[in-house]
Length: 248
Ligand code: NDP
Image (spheres, rainbow, N blue to C red):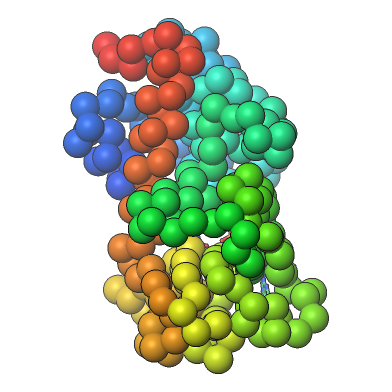
């Protein structure tokens, strides 16, 4: 909804990933003045459509729309972003169908790199519902010892320097400096910050961090593409759950 330029890029990337994989997709680009009722009606219609397996609402939404009401309206079985409270709760208990795409992408990167989380000190900087909190739960499910940091954390650097696995999801360009990182640590940068017309940087100061870290993800090109891959995986799962084919 509306004309957020970053949202436009994200939606285009998601549509392209669907097209590349042969997943049928529909886009509803609603004008900013659409009412909440109209948006909710559309979601309810899509919830009922048998040929649609997954529904996502690209955030952020305009201010007159209650984000929580919107996310609560998506059928939990079609909730491919895993933001519905039912799916959030399932993640907490460790019995889930959908995992939020960004934290899931981080876990996949860790797994595919042959890194075992069990017993490691994991520090997540950021506690948003979309990234930080579910990220911490997923690391905990893999038997990491997890610390969640946020804007009120006292002596942040002291915490981050203890991390064997450090996940930065802060939204501040180059926030994590080299001296905040334990030598040899795995550093995963979720941040996507536009600092100039065509320049994206992460939440980690890559130049400094790569000299200290044992492994590190770049921005762009690290967690971002994984997020979309995980969305596709959730969509496939949704098709299985709903017994829909996702095709016309
Ligand atoms: P939010 O703004 O919702 O959350 C940011 C978190 O960082 C908050 O918990 C906040 O703490 C914490 N924080 C802010 N300042 C500090 C500080 N000085 N010290 C410690 N913690 C701090 O952001 P998101 O979680 O939605 O996103 C984080 C970043 O990840 C952004 O750059 C976003 O663009 C990117 N992102 C990337 C995705 C991808 O696909 N790669 C997907 C989603 C997001 P508090 O709670 O106390 O305010």
